[in-house]
Length: 257
Image 1 (tube, rainbow, N blue to C red):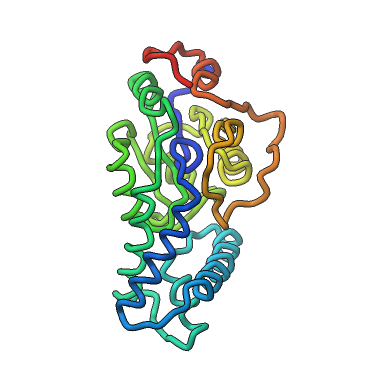
Image 2: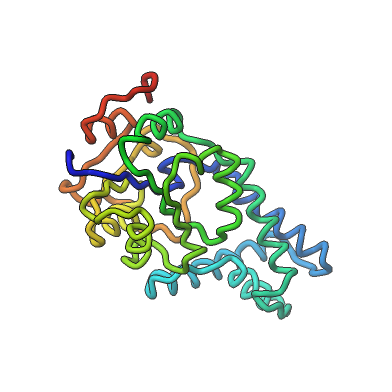
């Protein structure tokens, strides 16, 4: 891959993992915040309504290629309990912030990630393209994990309004990276959003299966489709060493997992 000038990365289950208990804790914090505002809710009933709303809006988002947002899920879920609160109401905004505060505590870098990025930086332009509905939370999460300094360009779907696998979000990513599509390797775990999405946009996708190959506990998004094999034509890696080998670059950092 001597013609490669940039490497792009997905975030969740590619560079970081989120413990499964995070989502339950996030719902507890959301429900507690709404209760503190005077809205009486039974936790399990509200959780089911929230998930149902999320699935509904994710399906719409995927069909249109546009990102959804948690505030719409909360508003729709509350309506099932006879509570009318507009998605842009500050009350819901506080609930969204409370929900995502859980992610800051339960997210962890995949071993060797910083060393890998440090080794690639300078040889390639590095970018991040993540499907993350609430961009302010994504910004905080990246800062807490010490990642922003590695990237030349970051695209968060919740900020730009489009989400993978829609080609428009990849075009925005390429525009910010300042390179041509066929000059970019894009690394991600989702066969549809990351691999096929990047391929359809002209990038060179690499499917990473480190998380599943190592049986790491992780959150599976309700937006994720069937996690099958995207096809033998796409390179697959199970470690950062595999990525170095694919790029034809010897790691300058200590041995990676």
